[in-house]
Amino acid sequence: MKSIKVFLWGKRMKDIYPFATKLEVAKYKIAKFMRKLVFYTILSLVISGITIGLFLIYFPNRVVVSQITTDTLTPKIEQIQNKALADLKACESGGASESVGLITFDPHQTNKKVEEASLGSFQFKKATVIHYYKTLYQKDITGKESILIALDDKKAESLARDIIFTTEKGYSNWYNCSNKIKLQQTLLVLDTLK
Image (cartoon, rainbow, N blue to C red; front, side, top):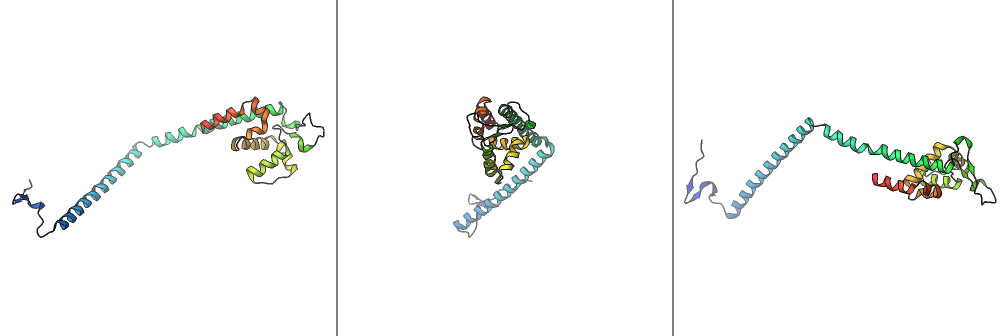
């Protein structure tokens, strides 16, 4: 059935508001517009929600693929870090194993003190171990503890990893070997991967 358009003196009846002022007519039209706006906004939100829900139900693998892609970078970074540490250890220790208990004195040093010796596979000095344990882990350790850490390959490697990869210019503690194995360039590569 068709709607009937009714006119009075040339104006449609739906546009005539008897006994209403122009301000009241404007208020009425604004209120009518706002009701329609709210209705259509809610309707569009409901339709969008249903559409997104259906999309996630029918295509759940899209989210999983993005998580797998971002997670493949971590093993690469660890692999590069492990290689750098192995190269540094080989350079510093000259290939000596942990069981040797490597202690090296500077050949120019006349008074050979344990405080000045380079200890273990990573050739740590006592003061260096004590300093970085305080700086990195907020832990005070004794001289004996620092020697035992330097002579233990696992603990020394863990400390070297934290020094090199978490402190600024930590690689400079191994000046000669870090230049020899190009450790600074490796760190630049790692920075681009992060």
